[in-house]
Image: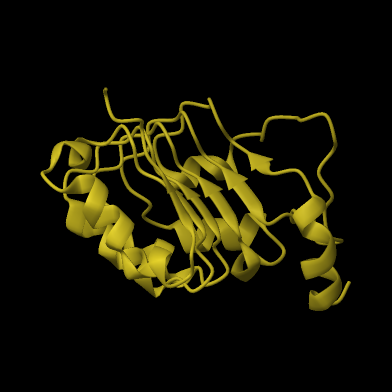
Length: 169
């Protein structure tokens, strides 16, 4: 399958889903079975997944050390990763490895422990990022959170969206 064929078909593929697996470190993905969805995952001849989506939500990850090495073993085309769900983990910062995923368009980080609003600026380098969730992180309590997030160049320039909780009335 050519890379172009992959780009055209894998968006339709179900995610590689490791949610609710109590994963503590990224390397645990190598010994864990992904969750089975309604549609089976397609794999390359080498056994790697042909998907652009990776779900790691509702685990206990506090860092992404070794992320590139592990996804290279799991995904046929890790460079085409477009959607990562890291929500409801224990991440305290936005790991620089996420800034190397230039095809990333959806990133869920809500319900983590990210303290500093400045962490989000790292993501400005991602040209295709269109959807980012951050609610439920301690940074949400920083003064100016809503306006600062909306001003981020990576979202205003690309006209993406940031999901925000409703303001109390």
